[in-house]
Image (cartoon, rainbow, N blue to C red; front, top):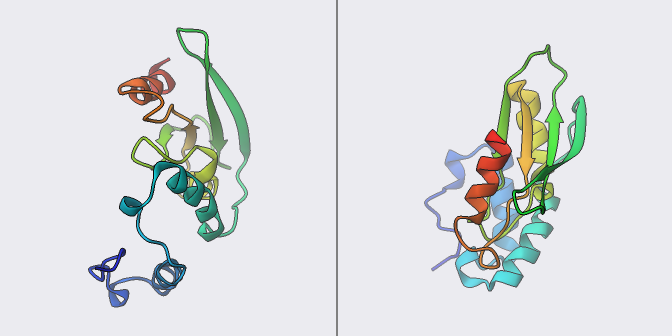
Length: 146
């Protein structure tokens, strides 16, 4: 069985998406379910190369949020060139709560900021298995509600 199923047939994708999918297929990527955690964490960083150009936004600012235990939650605030006030979205990077980071999705978040005209707070929630459930969820709620 191919790690990337053909259910995503190239004829239903934009040419750019089909090219990206073919690049991933030809790279030998085995699929997430066949990787050990450390390997998956390394691969997700390497996938930044497929993200495209970094779009300019009005502001990119690192943010630290204090947790009740005194540790700090890292985040990045992105703002578009748009009129204020503007809505703010809390962005949780993908990775099944176990891989990825807020910096690994920089290009995607910049694109979302520009297309939505929303400010986005991309958070670097704690990852499993080092931090058991509901640690990541607590980080998300802290970022959203303080």
